[in-house]
Amino acid sequence: MVFRIADPFDALLDWQRALDSVRHSDWFGAGTASSGAFPPINVFRKEDDMVLIAEIPGADKNKIDIQVKDNQVRLSGKKEITRGDGVSVHRRERSSGEFDRVLTLPAEIDAGKVKAEYRNGILAVFLPRAESDKPRSITIG
Amino acid sequence: MSPQDLEVQQKKELESREETTKTGRYFVPFTDIHETADALTVTMEMPGVDKQNIDINLEKNILAVTGNVDFSAYDNLEPLYAEYNVGNYARRFTISSKIDQNAIAAAMEDGVLTITLPKTKEAAARHIKVR
Image 1 (cartoon, rainbow over the protein chains, first blue to last red):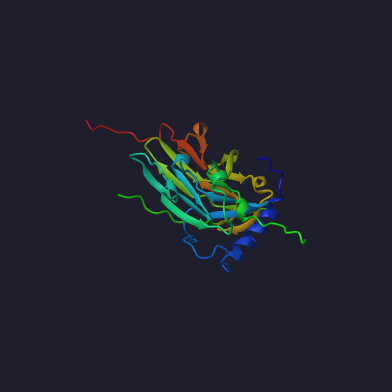
Image 2: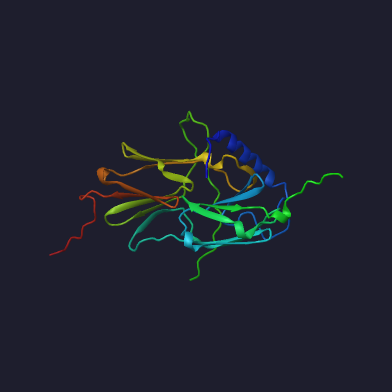
């Protein structure tokens, strides 16, 4: 992937607006997607396609399972924390456990072309829109 | 025992007494601190931070950790739906002088930073036998 330098402040403002609007929108419609479930997810549009980004720090990428069907994405897996024996804990803020969540997207996904990468604790799933779902221009004859 | 279900932890924005000259938000990374007989381990979750963009500074017993997120990865992406905000991470701890400050080591893996602070020999727990 080739990235250009972005203005971080601009990107943040956009996020904030999206965050604020989410409470008043039913963009995802009815589904099992629930806000507050782990992992927290951001969805972006990249031309015709969508990119799902989730923060799962410290997960084993072999234990993250991604399933795509029609317009739904399911993320499940395990986030484990290994603590040694005989340690005394001074502070414990990190959480561990299992997660499983389904997200309903507003467009059909071409499941065969989905790509995912896990880097620096961030899971990115590239979700190409299905050809059958793309709008078509119609010429008036 | 079955593992517990994970819940989302809301990110806490850093409240700093100083102001930065750079724009952008700073969040407090979720941190675990463990102690063994010979070392103190600080584990911080900083998803999205590359190991080159981590700055660990120890001065006057204050361990200051800053992690910067590479925002250029989000270039060309238009947000549609958001559940969390993205920003840099920063946190400071005052550590005891019993730490061997020259032997501090750090490792970054999958967005989790682990800092090992070995105790000085004098401070390490010793078992004393009663004769």
